[in-house]
Image 1 (cartoon, rainbow, N blue to C red):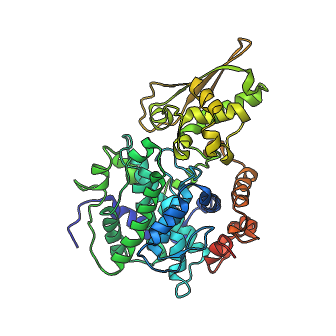
Image 2 (image 1 turned 60 degrees about the vertical axis):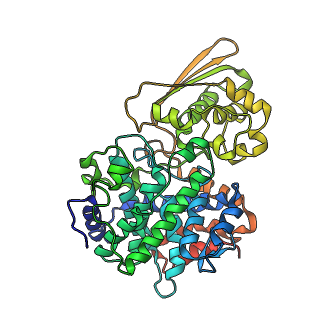
Image 3 (image 1 turned 45 degrees about the vertical axis):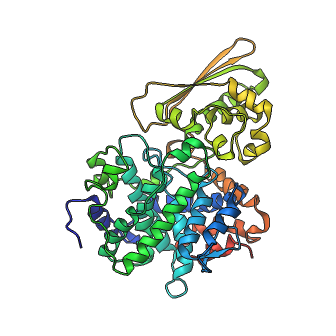
Length: 460
């Protein structure tokens, strides 16, 4: 083992060891169930995104057969490849949950890697519901404490890179790794971590594939650690550690100071719309304005929105004549144009025919999006909207807390319907009784074998 300074990985490892399921707070368990169900539904819906078949075939090339199942598909792949496949499906439609302070989608890498690991370990080591919930809660805690400590903007794609540290923590729980194996695995994972913001800027499906790459790397890291291959020890805070190389600055007190006091999964937000989270403030603000004042798109003469610098950098991109689906999901003006047209924003709004429709493109180009002077490099809100009606009436709205955030949460009815709508999009790709997972996940702590989740969400 290499010499260790005072790296945060030691504190995270102790945090995991000191929190068996029985020590986890009720509100964290409740949130884990909510976002487990949400992520499963989003992953199933992800099979309808572009490039899915090519992604699965590419992962399968040269890897041989395996036991790892893929959501809503008949493929069986080795665990690392299946982890990459599932993580891509969970994130590829920009519909998976997000921790806003951390600027991180905490469930994509984590659950993407856990699902095929449950297949890999069973039946010799059955993963029960309590173990799964513990893995989710503590894995999210690690990833989101890392992300929340960062006080500079994104260069590397944090949902992939930092998300992988959470996935390794969760996988170590399933594999019953020792503390030393977990520390090795974090170092081995970091050596493979990848994914930059360039794919986000260009609006490519590669963005979600980067999430897949990190899920694959997390699984591989655990496998290597179990074979006693050593990993770095100053993995987060060393001179070339994650926080000093892939990020530009962080608050050491925030990194571990709130462990056991704030459970990050209770801060995770739903995504009510299948678009970049940075679009959601203005999308929901416009939705509210149209509902409150009984407006229709034809009533609107002009729409201007003002957003924080991070929001502008993520989704203030120009409208193009030939946008990809991924680009459109990250284009605030396009998303607003669809709300003006329909009063809502859903999966159907990202059909390529609609994205390329000249009327939609023209309308989107008329919308003004400006960057405000918010000094917080990670702020997604507040956002302000100024809407001018054709009769000259001017209306203003400010959104301080974005819909889906725990402080402005989706109702149980709404997030349950989101899951049901998502599985309804895939028909026979899932079990005919996949809707019963709503109740099953609510009582997942009573399940002895979590392979039942994939039994219900793969073809019969």
